[in-house]
Image (cartoon, rainbow, N blue to C red; front, side, top):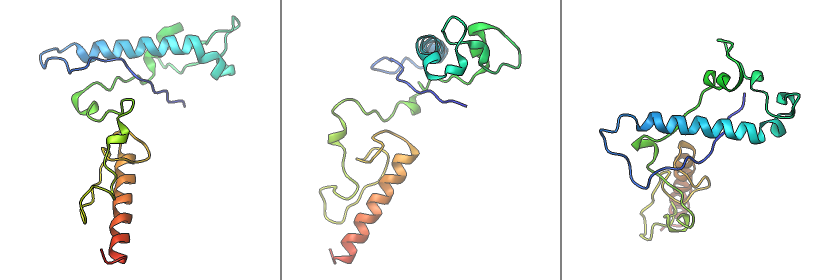
Length: 148
């Protein structure tokens, strides 16, 4: 099993709420990017999935409907995270330095936690929220032990 992740170019603002085809267009774009990636890099990453011509062999993908070629990608899980709740936290170049640290909000005794804070993953995620929460707890316990 392999998971591939990549940036999906998007618009600076969310589409209108009545654009019912937006997610389908983005999914098609993600699928096209997956095909291009596998065609360009798949054989080098997975030598066992290399065809006799040296390109990625889509026949190595599991497909219970037994389609052939690129159509076998339709049996794989491809997703485009483009819904409003999936776009909320960005990590654009240079922006991470502006995030508050869980233990350094600028106010004595005020600790913050969440995936939007300065934390190791730098992205909106459950993992980031957990790391931030742990850092805030460490800062709070440290301050308590010092009598602050």
